[in-house]
Figure 1 (tube, helix red, strand yellow):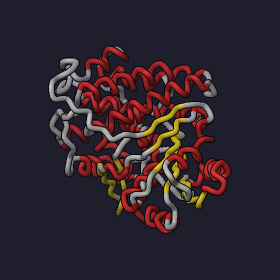
Figure 2: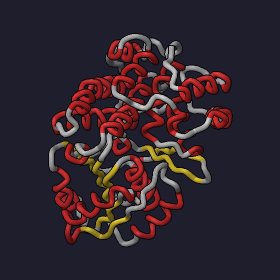
Figure 3: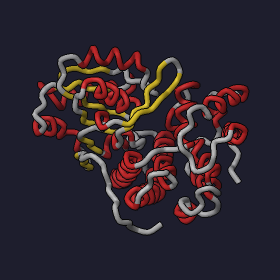
Figure 4: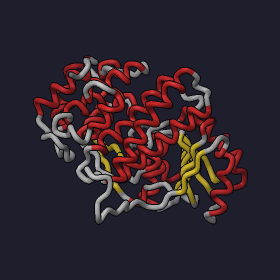
Amino acid sequence: MSVFHAGFEPGHPPVRVRIGVGIRHEIGAEMTAMGLSRALVLTTPGQAARGEEVRSILGALAFGLFNRATMHTPVEITEAALVAASGADCLIAIGGGSTIGLAKAIALRTDLPQIVLPTTYAGSEATPVLGQTASGIKETLRSPKVQPEVILYDPELVATLPVKLSVASALNAMAHAVEALYARDRTPLSDQLAIGGIRAFKRGLLRVISDPGDLVARQDTQFGAWLCGTVLAQVGMSLHHKLCHTLGGSFNLPHAETHAILLPHSAAYNAEAASEALAPVVEIFGGSVGGGLYDFAASLGAPLALRSLGIVERELDLAADLAVRNPYWNPRPIERDAIRALLQRAWAGERPE
């Protein structure tokens, strides 16, 4: 693929992005610059203390706190949050994909502007993508209405993220980049964002593992998260994300860990059909596409088997059936038996060949 081609258009909306130690203390200034004065703060139950800290920082600018954000953005939680948001003029989400997903779901329905403070590496904050779960089925959509207007990356907010969660969240972000490399609508910009994000994580994660409180390493990995999230905003996703949405929405598996486990297997599935596109992955990790990603994940102590997340083997048949319904575009045809075999290997934690 050439480095550049005529007619290339980046086509992404403007987003204000700031990275720096302690930058969360400038939330009020960001609100004032946007002419806002009544912020509803969003968190998960486990991050409620963070929400209270943000309310304290905001002072009179804080409208309220809703701390019931939940994994996979169930619509019933969104409906409750909409009641809490009545009278607010903006949303401040502090957390990972669950909280940011809730902010997006509210924004989709209300057009309220969003300021987000990520506490993981998932990258949802950088995308116009929303996944919502209703009646056990998770579906995704793209809309400029759900793209946050301001992203504040504060390394102090991820410095306390446990190493295991840091690793799983980072591999979740890297999955965006790996799939972007073989996306149907890939561009020179998306390729460079993807490669840059993968390299940033490969360099930074080992330093995070050796010293979780290293704010420079945390800042570097936050930059990787932004690159990987931004590339997800540029292109469509394929098999990997379909599998993760199926397993997350229908079997309630944890989001980041599911991405981390499936990434080597979904990449291996597409390796032959997208060998040229995935060549940078081989260059960065060595070996084969799937094997290199698996070995890297193993070196980080990442989860490697779906069975460790609680899904039982007999459920894999249903998972395969659901995964091939309304499939996303993929460089290799989506074949039910091949997907079932992929899930079996991922369930057992086997290294892809």
